[in-house]
Image (cartoon, rainbow, N blue to C red):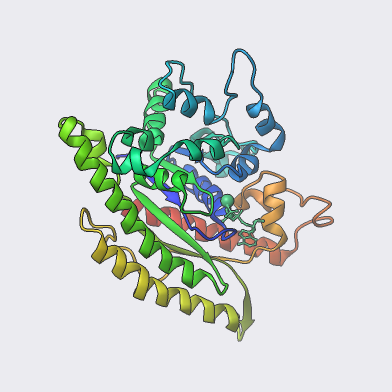
Amino acid sequence: MTKKVISIFNNKGGVGKTNIIWNLGIALADKAKKVLFIDFDPQCNLSIAVIGYEEFEKCLENDENFPFGKTIRSYIQPYIQSLENTQVFSEKPKYKPKNNNKNKSLFWDNIDIIPGDFWLNRFADYLNVGSDVNGGNGIHRFLVLESLIKKIEKERNVNYDYVLIDLAPSFNTLVRLALYCSDYFLVPCTADLFSAYCVGLIGEVLPSFIDDWIQGKSKYLKLNPYDKLVSNKGKPKFGGWIFNGFDTKVKKGAINKIAADKAQFNKVIASVENNLLPKLKSDIEDYECVPNFVPREPVAEIEDLNTIASDSIVQNIPIQYLSKEKPTREIQNGSWSQGQKRLMSSMSEQYNSLAEYIINNF
Ligand SMILES: Nc1ncnc2c1ncn2[C@@H]1O[C@H](COP(=O)(O)OP(=O)(O)OP(=O)(O)O)[C@@H](O)[C@H]1O
Ligand SMILES: [Mg+2]
Protein backbone atom coordinates (compact mmCIF):
# COMPACT_ATOMS: atom_id res chain seq x y z
CA MET A 1 0.00 0.00 0.00
CA THR A 2 1.31 3.44 -0.83
CA LYS A 3 1.29 6.10 1.79
CA LYS A 4 -1.46 8.72 1.63
CA VAL A 5 -0.90 12.24 2.84
CA ILE A 6 -4.15 13.90 3.91
CA SER A 7 -4.70 17.51 4.95
CA ILE A 8 -7.71 18.46 7.02
CA PHE A 9 -8.49 21.89 5.76
CA ASN A 10 -10.99 24.72 5.89
CA ASN A 11 -10.17 28.40 5.86
CA LYS A 12 -13.00 28.77 8.34
CA GLY A 13 -11.88 28.51 11.98
CA GLY A 14 -13.26 26.34 14.75
CA VAL A 15 -14.99 23.82 12.49
CA GLY A 16 -13.45 20.80 14.22
CA LYS A 17 -10.36 20.17 12.08
CA THR A 18 -8.14 19.34 15.04
CA ASN A 19 -10.72 17.19 16.83
CA ILE A 20 -11.47 15.25 13.68
CA ILE A 21 -7.86 14.64 12.77
CA TRP A 22 -7.13 13.29 16.23
CA ASN A 23 -10.08 10.91 16.44
CA LEU A 24 -9.73 9.84 12.81
CA GLY A 25 -6.06 9.07 13.38
CA ILE A 26 -6.94 6.88 16.36
CA ALA A 27 -9.54 5.02 14.28
CA LEU A 28 -7.03 4.38 11.48
CA ALA A 29 -4.33 3.27 13.91
CA ASP A 30 -6.72 0.88 15.66
CA LYS A 31 -7.24 -0.72 12.25
CA ALA A 32 -3.53 -1.55 12.26
CA LYS A 33 -2.55 1.39 10.05
CA LYS A 34 0.61 3.33 10.75
CA VAL A 35 -0.28 6.97 11.26
CA LEU A 36 1.87 10.07 11.44
CA PHE A 37 0.29 13.32 12.64
CA ILE A 38 1.98 16.52 11.55
CA ASP A 39 0.93 19.59 13.50
CA PHE A 40 1.41 22.31 10.90
CA ASP A 41 -0.76 24.86 12.67
CA PRO A 42 1.12 27.52 14.68
CA GLN A 43 -1.69 27.30 17.26
CA CYS A 44 -0.37 23.80 18.05
CA ASN A 45 -3.77 22.57 19.25
CA LEU A 46 -3.24 19.06 17.94
CA SER A 47 0.07 18.70 19.79
CA ILE A 48 -1.51 19.85 23.04
CA ALA A 49 -4.49 17.51 22.60
CA VAL A 50 -2.39 14.47 21.75
CA ILE A 51 0.69 14.74 23.98
CA GLY A 52 -0.54 17.13 26.68
CA TYR A 53 0.52 20.65 27.49
CA GLU A 54 3.45 19.77 29.79
CA GLU A 55 5.11 17.45 27.33
CA PHE A 56 4.54 19.95 24.55
CA GLU A 57 6.22 22.73 26.56
CA LYS A 58 9.26 20.49 26.94
CA CYS A 59 9.39 20.05 23.16
CA LEU A 60 9.61 23.82 22.74
CA GLU A 61 12.64 24.20 25.03
CA ASN A 62 15.90 24.81 23.22
CA ASP A 63 19.53 24.71 24.24
CA GLU A 64 22.94 24.20 22.68
CA ASN A 65 22.20 20.58 21.78
CA PHE A 66 18.71 21.23 20.51
CA PRO A 67 18.89 24.74 19.07
CA PHE A 68 15.45 24.49 17.48
CA GLY A 69 13.78 22.46 20.25
CA LYS A 70 12.17 19.13 19.49
CA THR A 71 9.34 20.24 17.27
CA ILE A 72 8.75 20.50 13.54
CA ARG A 73 11.05 23.52 13.61
CA SER A 74 14.08 21.29 14.19
CA TYR A 75 13.60 19.91 10.70
CA ILE A 76 12.25 22.91 8.82
CA GLN A 77 14.55 25.69 9.93
CA PRO A 78 17.83 23.96 8.98
CA TYR A 79 16.16 22.69 5.77
CA ILE A 80 15.29 26.16 4.52
CA GLN A 81 18.62 27.57 5.64
CA SER A 82 20.34 24.77 3.69
CA LEU A 83 22.12 23.60 6.85
CA GLU A 84 23.14 19.99 7.33
CA ASN A 85 21.73 19.38 10.78
CA THR A 86 18.05 18.72 10.10
CA GLN A 87 16.59 16.61 12.90
CA VAL A 88 13.20 14.93 13.20
CA PHE A 89 11.63 14.48 16.61
CA SER A 90 8.34 12.80 17.25
CA GLU A 91 6.21 12.05 20.29
CA LYS A 92 3.72 9.40 21.35
CA PRO A 93 0.14 10.06 22.51
CA LYS A 94 -0.08 10.78 26.24
CA TYR A 95 -3.05 8.46 26.66
CA LYS A 96 -2.22 4.79 26.58
CA PRO A 97 -5.22 2.48 27.08
CA LYS A 98 -4.77 -0.19 29.69
CA ASN A 99 -4.12 -3.43 27.91
CA ASN A 100 -6.95 -5.86 27.99
CA ASN A 101 -6.45 -8.58 25.45
CA LYS A 102 -10.05 -8.91 24.39
CA ASN A 103 -10.23 -5.50 22.79
CA LYS A 104 -6.61 -4.69 22.33
CA SER A 105 -6.06 -1.13 21.26
CA LEU A 106 -3.36 -0.67 18.67
CA PHE A 107 -3.33 3.05 18.38
CA TRP A 108 -0.58 3.90 20.82
CA ASP A 109 1.97 1.76 19.01
CA ASN A 110 0.84 2.92 15.58
CA ILE A 111 0.77 6.69 16.08
CA ASP A 112 3.55 9.24 16.05
CA ILE A 113 3.16 12.99 16.10
CA ILE A 114 5.55 15.67 14.98
CA PRO A 115 4.76 18.52 17.36
CA GLY A 116 3.93 21.94 16.00
CA ASP A 117 5.66 25.18 16.93
CA PHE A 118 4.55 28.80 17.26
CA TRP A 119 7.65 29.50 15.15
CA LEU A 120 5.65 28.28 12.13
CA ASN A 121 4.28 31.83 11.97
CA ARG A 122 7.79 33.04 11.17
CA PHE A 123 8.30 30.25 8.68
CA ALA A 124 5.13 31.37 6.88
CA ASP A 125 6.78 34.79 6.43
CA TYR A 126 9.91 33.27 4.83
CA LEU A 127 7.87 31.58 2.13
CA ASN A 128 7.29 33.61 -0.97
CA VAL A 129 4.74 32.44 -3.50
CA GLY A 130 5.95 34.77 -6.27
CA SER A 131 9.60 33.79 -6.29
CA ASP A 132 9.49 30.31 -4.71
CA VAL A 133 6.47 28.89 -6.52
CA ASN A 134 5.67 30.97 -9.62
CA GLY A 135 9.33 31.62 -10.35
CA GLY A 136 10.12 27.94 -9.77
CA ASN A 137 13.34 28.65 -7.88
CA GLY A 138 12.17 27.74 -4.42
CA ILE A 139 9.65 25.09 -5.29
CA HIS A 140 11.40 22.60 -3.00
CA ARG A 141 10.74 24.87 -0.05
CA PHE A 142 7.08 24.10 -0.59
CA LEU A 143 7.87 20.37 -0.46
CA VAL A 144 9.50 20.45 2.96
CA LEU A 145 6.82 18.20 4.49
CA GLU A 146 7.42 15.55 1.84
CA SER A 147 11.10 15.69 2.64
CA LEU A 148 10.43 15.50 6.38
CA ILE A 149 8.23 12.42 5.96
CA LYS A 150 10.94 10.71 3.87
CA LYS A 151 13.54 11.46 6.52
CA ILE A 152 11.55 10.11 9.47
CA GLU A 153 10.61 6.97 7.54
CA LYS A 154 14.21 6.31 6.58
CA GLU A 155 15.69 7.03 10.00
CA ARG A 156 13.15 4.92 11.89
CA ASN A 157 12.74 2.28 9.22
CA VAL A 158 8.96 2.66 9.21
CA ASN A 159 6.44 3.12 6.43
CA TYR A 160 3.46 5.19 7.40
CA ASP A 161 0.12 4.33 5.81
CA TYR A 162 -1.40 7.72 6.53
CA VAL A 163 0.08 11.11 7.26
CA LEU A 164 -2.55 13.49 8.64
CA ILE A 165 -1.73 17.20 8.56
CA ASP A 166 -3.50 19.69 10.81
CA LEU A 167 -3.73 23.25 9.51
CA ALA A 168 -4.63 26.74 10.63
CA PRO A 169 -7.88 28.27 9.36
CA SER A 170 -6.40 30.20 6.48
CA PHE A 171 -5.33 30.18 2.85
CA ASN A 172 -1.82 31.24 3.86
CA THR A 173 1.50 29.86 2.63
CA LEU A 174 1.56 27.04 5.21
CA VAL A 175 -1.80 25.77 4.03
CA ARG A 176 -0.71 26.05 0.41
CA LEU A 177 2.50 24.16 1.19
CA ALA A 178 0.59 21.37 2.96
CA LEU A 179 -1.85 21.06 0.07
CA TYR A 180 0.99 20.81 -2.46
CA CYS A 181 2.40 17.93 -0.36
CA SER A 182 -0.98 16.16 0.07
CA ASP A 183 -2.70 13.44 -1.91
CA TYR A 184 -6.10 14.34 -0.49
CA PHE A 185 -7.84 16.98 1.59
CA LEU A 186 -10.96 16.69 3.73
CA VAL A 187 -13.11 19.70 4.60
CA PRO A 188 -14.96 19.87 7.94
CA CYS A 189 -17.94 22.27 8.14
CA THR A 190 -20.22 23.33 10.95
CA ALA A 191 -23.89 24.25 11.03
CA ASP A 192 -23.60 28.00 10.74
CA LEU A 193 -24.20 30.81 8.30
CA PHE A 194 -20.65 31.05 6.99
CA SER A 195 -19.88 27.40 6.23
CA ALA A 196 -21.64 27.33 2.87
CA TYR A 197 -19.82 30.50 1.82
CA CYS A 198 -16.42 29.20 2.95
CA VAL A 199 -16.84 25.93 1.08
CA GLY A 200 -17.53 27.90 -2.09
CA LEU A 201 -14.35 29.92 -1.55
CA ILE A 202 -12.24 26.77 -1.64
CA GLY A 203 -13.51 26.26 -5.19
CA GLU A 204 -12.24 29.74 -6.07
CA VAL A 205 -8.88 29.55 -4.34
CA LEU A 206 -7.59 26.01 -4.86
CA PRO A 207 -7.50 26.27 -8.68
CA SER A 208 -5.35 29.41 -8.36
CA PHE A 209 -2.94 27.54 -6.05
CA ILE A 210 -2.67 24.80 -8.65
CA ASP A 211 -2.15 27.33 -11.47
CA ASP A 212 0.80 28.79 -9.55
CA TRP A 213 2.25 25.33 -9.08
CA ILE A 214 1.93 24.41 -12.76
CA GLN A 215 3.61 27.65 -13.77
CA GLY A 216 6.53 27.14 -11.35
CA LYS A 217 6.79 23.44 -12.14
CA SER A 218 7.27 24.01 -15.87
CA LYS A 219 10.03 26.56 -15.23
CA TYR A 220 11.68 24.28 -12.71
CA LEU A 221 11.50 21.19 -14.92
CA LYS A 222 13.16 23.00 -17.83
CA LEU A 223 16.24 23.28 -15.65
CA ASN A 224 15.78 19.95 -13.82
CA PRO A 225 14.17 17.64 -16.39
CA TYR A 226 14.73 14.41 -14.42
CA ASP A 227 13.22 15.58 -11.14
CA LYS A 228 10.37 13.18 -10.31
CA LEU A 229 9.31 14.72 -7.03
CA VAL A 230 8.10 18.06 -8.31
CA SER A 231 6.17 16.46 -11.19
CA ASN A 232 4.25 14.20 -8.82
CA LYS A 233 3.33 16.78 -6.20
CA GLY A 234 0.92 19.71 -6.29
CA LYS A 235 -2.06 17.43 -7.04
CA PRO A 236 -4.29 17.37 -3.95
CA LYS A 237 -7.67 15.71 -4.50
CA PHE A 238 -10.91 16.59 -2.72
CA GLY A 239 -11.73 13.61 -0.48
CA GLY A 240 -15.09 14.86 0.80
CA TRP A 241 -16.54 17.05 3.52
CA ILE A 242 -17.52 16.34 7.11
CA PHE A 243 -20.51 17.84 8.93
CA ASN A 244 -19.50 18.60 12.51
CA GLY A 245 -21.15 19.83 15.68
CA PHE A 246 -24.85 19.78 14.81
CA ASP A 247 -27.71 19.24 17.27
CA THR A 248 -30.29 16.48 17.11
CA LYS A 249 -33.66 15.68 18.58
CA VAL A 250 -35.45 12.37 18.97
CA LYS A 251 -38.90 12.15 17.42
CA LYS A 252 -40.89 8.91 17.31
CA GLY A 253 -37.73 6.97 18.09
CA ALA A 254 -35.76 8.47 15.18
CA ILE A 255 -32.79 10.81 15.69
CA ASN A 256 -32.89 13.82 13.38
CA LYS A 257 -30.99 17.08 13.01
CA ILE A 258 -32.82 20.02 14.56
CA ALA A 259 -34.49 22.19 11.92
CA ALA A 260 -32.00 25.08 12.04
CA ASP A 261 -29.01 22.76 11.60
CA LYS A 262 -30.77 20.77 8.89
CA ALA A 263 -31.27 24.04 6.98
CA GLN A 264 -27.54 24.87 7.23
CA PHE A 265 -26.68 21.30 6.26
CA ASN A 266 -28.73 21.68 3.08
CA LYS A 267 -27.00 24.98 2.30
CA VAL A 268 -23.56 23.37 2.60
CA ILE A 269 -24.60 20.48 0.33
CA ALA A 270 -25.90 23.00 -2.22
CA SER A 271 -22.65 24.95 -2.06
CA VAL A 272 -20.57 21.79 -2.47
CA GLU A 273 -22.69 20.75 -5.43
CA ASN A 274 -23.07 24.13 -7.13
CA ASN A 275 -19.86 25.97 -6.24
CA LEU A 276 -17.11 23.68 -5.03
CA LEU A 277 -17.33 20.56 -7.21
CA PRO A 278 -17.91 22.31 -10.56
CA LYS A 279 -15.00 24.71 -9.95
CA LEU A 280 -12.60 21.95 -8.93
CA LYS A 281 -13.65 19.89 -11.94
CA SER A 282 -13.56 22.63 -14.56
CA ASP A 283 -10.75 24.92 -13.37
CA ILE A 284 -8.17 22.25 -12.54
CA GLU A 285 -7.03 20.56 -15.73
CA ASP A 286 -3.70 19.12 -14.66
CA TYR A 287 -5.28 16.16 -12.83
CA GLU A 288 -8.66 14.86 -11.68
CA CYS A 289 -9.23 16.86 -8.50
CA VAL A 290 -12.58 15.24 -7.65
CA PRO A 291 -12.45 11.45 -7.77
CA ASN A 292 -15.66 9.65 -8.79
CA PHE A 293 -16.18 8.05 -5.39
CA VAL A 294 -16.60 11.41 -3.62
CA PRO A 295 -20.27 12.12 -2.82
CA ARG A 296 -21.92 15.53 -2.51
CA GLU A 297 -23.14 14.45 0.94
CA PRO A 298 -20.76 14.48 3.92
CA VAL A 299 -18.42 11.53 4.38
CA ALA A 300 -18.95 11.70 8.17
CA GLU A 301 -21.43 13.41 10.47
CA ILE A 302 -20.27 14.29 13.98
CA GLU A 303 -22.92 15.59 16.39
CA ASP A 304 -22.40 18.34 18.92
CA LEU A 305 -20.48 16.58 21.68
CA ASN A 306 -20.76 19.47 24.15
CA THR A 307 -18.55 18.94 27.21
CA ILE A 308 -17.37 15.58 25.89
CA ALA A 309 -15.28 17.39 23.25
CA SER A 310 -13.57 19.69 25.73
CA ASP A 311 -13.04 16.95 28.31
CA SER A 312 -11.46 14.77 25.66
CA ILE A 313 -8.89 17.51 25.05
CA VAL A 314 -8.30 18.40 28.70
CA GLN A 315 -7.60 14.76 29.51
CA ASN A 316 -5.81 13.96 26.21
CA ILE A 317 -8.15 11.02 25.69
CA PRO A 318 -9.72 10.35 22.28
CA ILE A 319 -13.53 10.07 22.22
CA GLN A 320 -13.43 6.34 21.58
CA TYR A 321 -11.74 5.73 24.97
CA LEU A 322 -13.29 8.51 27.01
CA SER A 323 -16.24 6.51 28.37
CA LYS A 324 -13.76 4.12 30.01
CA GLU A 325 -12.34 7.00 32.06
CA LYS A 326 -13.90 9.40 34.53
CA PRO A 327 -14.85 12.93 33.44
CA THR A 328 -12.72 15.81 34.74
CA ARG A 329 -14.17 17.29 37.87
CA GLU A 330 -14.08 20.88 36.61
CA ILE A 331 -16.09 19.91 33.57
CA GLN A 332 -18.49 17.40 34.97
CA ASN A 333 -18.87 15.80 38.35
CA GLY A 334 -18.83 12.07 38.96
CA SER A 335 -19.39 9.94 35.93
CA TRP A 336 -20.68 10.03 32.39
CA SER A 337 -24.43 9.68 31.89
CA GLN A 338 -25.83 6.85 29.77
CA GLY A 339 -26.77 9.41 27.11
CA GLN A 340 -23.21 10.74 26.96
CA LYS A 341 -21.82 7.21 26.72
CA ARG A 342 -24.21 6.44 23.89
CA LEU A 343 -23.16 9.60 22.06
CA MET A 344 -19.46 8.76 22.49
CA SER A 345 -20.07 5.32 21.11
CA SER A 346 -22.11 6.44 18.11
CA MET A 347 -19.64 9.21 17.24
CA SER A 348 -16.75 6.73 17.50
CA GLU A 349 -18.65 4.74 14.89
CA GLN A 350 -18.61 7.82 12.65
CA TYR A 351 -14.83 8.13 12.99
CA ASN A 352 -14.52 4.40 12.31
CA SER A 353 -16.62 4.57 9.19
CA LEU A 354 -14.67 7.62 8.01
CA ALA A 355 -11.50 5.56 8.49
CA GLU A 356 -13.04 2.71 6.45
CA TYR A 357 -14.04 5.12 3.71
CA ILE A 358 -10.47 6.39 3.51
CA ILE A 359 -8.96 2.91 3.57
CA ASN A 360 -11.32 1.69 0.85
CA ASN A 361 -11.11 4.67 -1.48
CA PHE A 362 -7.99 6.80 -1.09
N1 LIG B 1 -18.46 17.84 17.49
C1 LIG B 1 -18.15 18.75 18.40
N2 LIG B 1 -18.97 18.96 19.47
C2 LIG B 1 -18.68 19.87 20.42
N3 LIG B 1 -17.57 20.61 20.43
C3 LIG B 1 -16.72 20.46 19.40
C4 LIG B 1 -16.95 19.53 18.34
N4 LIG B 1 -15.90 19.59 17.47
C5 LIG B 1 -15.08 20.52 17.97
N5 LIG B 1 -15.56 21.04 19.12
C6 LIG B 1 -14.96 22.09 19.95
O1 LIG B 1 -14.95 23.29 19.19
C7 LIG B 1 -13.72 23.95 19.33
C8 LIG B 1 -13.03 24.02 17.97
O2 LIG B 1 -12.72 22.69 17.53
P1 LIG B 1 -11.34 22.41 16.82
O3 LIG B 1 -10.23 23.00 17.60
O4 LIG B 1 -11.26 20.97 16.51
O5 LIG B 1 -11.59 23.24 15.49
P2 LIG B 1 -10.52 23.71 14.40
O6 LIG B 1 -11.23 23.77 13.12
O7 LIG B 1 -9.32 22.85 14.48
O8 LIG B 1 -10.16 25.17 14.93
P3 LIG B 1 -9.00 26.12 14.33
O9 LIG B 1 -9.56 26.64 13.07
O10 LIG B 1 -8.81 27.16 15.39
O11 LIG B 1 -7.80 25.26 14.14
C9 LIG B 1 -12.90 23.17 20.36
O12 LIG B 1 -13.11 23.74 21.61
C10 LIG B 1 -13.51 21.79 20.29
O13 LIG B 1 -13.39 21.10 21.52
MG1 LIG C 1 -7.35 23.37 14.79
